[in-house]
Image 1 (spheres, one colour):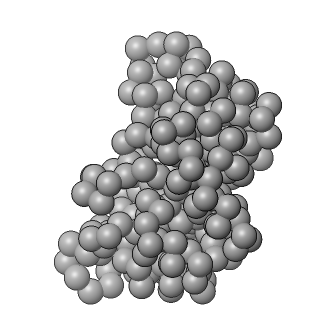
Image 2 (tube, helix red, strand yellow; image 1 turned 45 degrees about the vertical axis):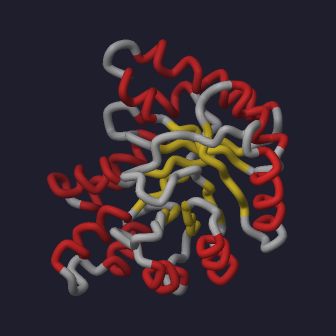
Length: 237
């Protein structure tokens, strides 16, 4: 089974647009789990434009499935995950002002930094995943720094899916197979939706987890949150 982790950043964006607590982020997270999601993902950024650091602390008390915290591993992020101890920490190379994650780690250039950081996080009993591009040097570099999992950055797959899905998926299949050979767990995320998710799972059947936020929340506006989560689960399994 491939786990569906719902990224609730966009729910926080909507709440923050008007202040107050509508929609209630904590209630939405609990509902996502109740409707079948096997995980909750958040990505607190330094400017707190969507998920706030206080949200993470509150969510830690109520999330009963896998709690996945994404972020650039600066001092504040590392202190946060040490306090919360989520099931998984997903490390991304984003600078503070980037709109959304838009690149994977250069695992060779950042070898020493990643290795030291990952070692420290694993000592806390937290599974580590790192965001990577679908190419063999990145995958082999990820194994060399000691991460448990990789998260394949799927923007290129999603963007090229309609033009030719076989060509679009090819580097992801190669990368996932190599990662599996090296003992890595395989996650995926970014721009996955109801149009392209089933084929991704078909071609990489051993996917551990997908993290989906923007498309899923947009679909929920039309289809309802419970129905949407069930539709995504159906595409995966």
